[in-house]
Structures are given as C-alpha cells and as structure tokens.
Length: 52
Image (cartoon, rainbow, N blue to C red; front, top):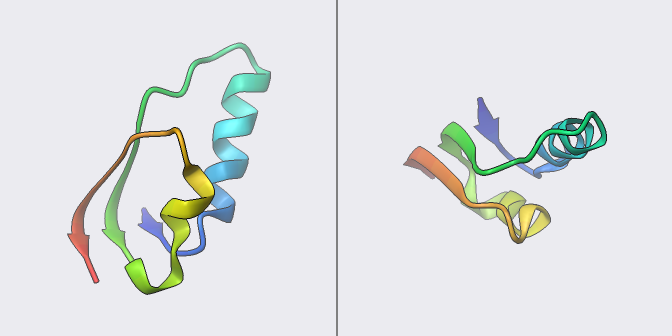
C-alpha cells in the first residue's frame, strides 16, 4: 500500500484494535513523506520500502 496522509491506515489500525487485535507494525510499499502521514500513526512502528 501507499502511506500518504495516514487516514486509511489509521482507520484500519483502529478497526483491528476494536476487533480485539493488536497492531504491532504498519508496512507500506511507498511512503509519501511530504504528506506527513506518519504523523497520524504516532506510536505505531512504520516500515516503507520506498520513501519519496
């Protein structure tokens, strides 16, 4: 997936937790750093193969 603003990733993380799961890390193929999506996922480790 692509990390842009982080809105979709944050919604998925909240859903996983609401269903009783634990989010241990979010993985992305591409992170668009200029959109600062990682700021919306504070406290969750993030890995991206490519950063633009």
